[in-house]
Image 1 (cartoon, each protein chain N blue to C red):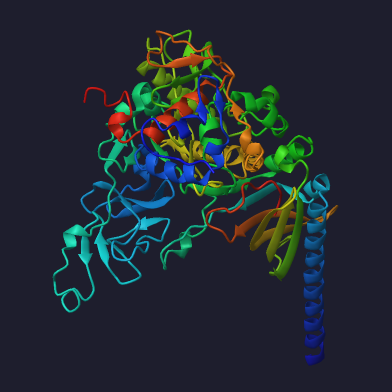
Image 2 (image 1 turned 90 degrees about the vertical axis):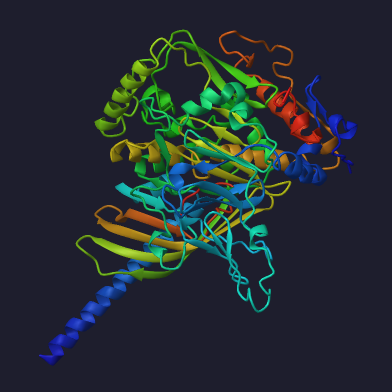
Length: 454
Length: 183
């Protein structure tokens, strides 16, 4: 049993995460005490992805989301303001929202009938006069609200910690890439909506297996996904040997592992040789011609917007547990030390015609999620890698994260980013470094460099 | 007159029983093909224009049950595809390097409560209930219960083909790590 202390510079935890040698103890993936500490130190502080404003377009609309292990409610109140509340009655803790989504005037607890307005205020307490003698201060017992909320180009984020830095500072150099993941194909900011509902399913592995490896482990592709191309699930069908990519036209570019080491965010991103946006090449031959037509026209509009600008970078894993990409959002919630609840959202252009939305939707369902032909093999590997790391002997063997160790560099074209070869383990090391910082920090003031000088 | 009507009714009843029996045998045969991993043969019973749909099921407020199951028209489901993707799934399993089905899972379909509706032309609507048990590797177990709503179409070669299948799984959060077999 590893004894863990949350204080700054705690050696017992630090000795498990040797970033100089690239050796990481399996304990951090299987140890119950470390897991409990993560819920406090990481999930109690970090900015977490909640959803998107298109899930709650009207006053009274709600969507049941999740922060760490806990259920939260994203709701648009009667005045149109967005809130995120912990889904628990302040009286005896019953969940006040038991529907996946919907519209409501009040959240009424089914236990003793306390009811809350959509802005979280406690408005109804049965027997308020006779039993509470009107002495209960209702203003003290509203729904518990997050410390900070941010609507970032339509995407909704929240943190429990009021001392967290502004969300854009939290994203750092990835703010622009994440912003572009919520723009429509024709380059309009906040131009997408999310398909409903979210896919949610359980994986038997620690949350860090998917969250810390996704978009930081290109090495797995050629082995894990060796069987996929014969299935030809991409929008081109059998053309180009079953290539799965949704957009063929790309400028000449070089792909890198890119990350912000100090913040833990990172992705597989490109640096382009040319400015602007590449001309469209037909990709959706298995769909009606209107689909390629739509994307071609959208691409032309986008090209005008970005004429002369370099669009380096892109989507990434935003620390700790969500991967934001252009057409999908992969979110992994801790669900016990050895279990993860995996969520998938899919963006689509809000103003696209139905034929395009349908094509996009069906492509995502056959690619992603628990029944998607690509991701099913990932689950198998994470499942049994996790299981085979729990044993007393297995725990003694550290995982090497040595690919590209010491071969990182920077590039003036992408300031703030740490780069490495496209197949490296740089992004995973960045996430682990940030994880260690969160685990050791006493408060946001220790989470250098964000609040430096503040 | 009365006697003729009785004969007519008896004949109708007999036809009805024969149809019920025929379809139950078809569904049992189909389950056998799936359980024995004879996927290429199974595909021969799938119509070229099949819609194979497994909706996600929401927790909704009483009175909103109409939107409990996701719509294939505009929403995200667990599975929503045609024959091209089903063929792709079979091809992928048959590579022997589709790791979530290598080694192959042990899957058993128990199909019951088969309701056969009146045929319309060469098609007939059939509802059945399933328990699907998956066991893989050493101790991994998944249990799925639900309802299938099929449209079967008469076929001169195979007897029947599945023209539409909706799989209504009795889960909200999917409790299995993946779905790598057929319902």
